[in-house]
Image (tube, rainbow, N blue to C red; front, side, top):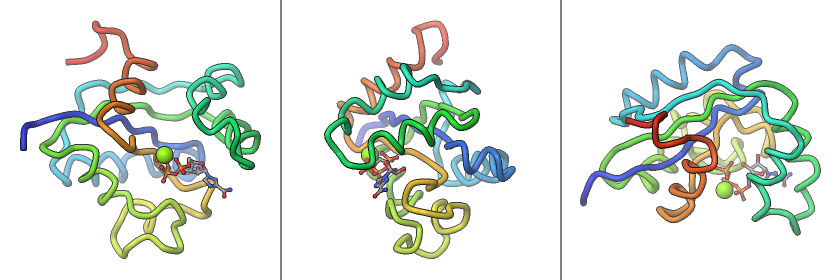
Length: 139
Ligand code: RTP
Ligand code: MG
């Protein structure tokens, strides 16, 4: 499998709880190379646009509110089979269902405040990475 890329965010709950360092450590220990990274506070407009795919879902308003509640770390990660392997590393959306040792199992508190984002396809990984990073901000 060729090396490819995924996109992640360390969400406001994990940032506020002091887990940036531990999560980045788990990500690099999991074999992912960080090829872009920034620390930003999303606005209603930027978070709303990022999550536009979830606009019709009942949790959309709360999700945008949560994702603007504090700063986040956004990053593009590189590894073989990056999208699938990263979703394995982070675990299920609901941390109560996330496997032992996964990032959400270790650092997440609820289905919404679930510590990290991971792209769900190669196509969305490219769209999400382009949303946050210009060509000069990725390596
Ligand atoms: P993500 O996109 O953040 O990696 O998470 P995911 O694929 O595992 O889950 P997805 O269905 O894409 O949902 C996006 C984010 O919305 C919040 N959520 N809240 N209240 C709820 O029932 C609910 N369901 C999902 C979570 O923050 C989830 O990660
Ligand atoms: Mg998703």
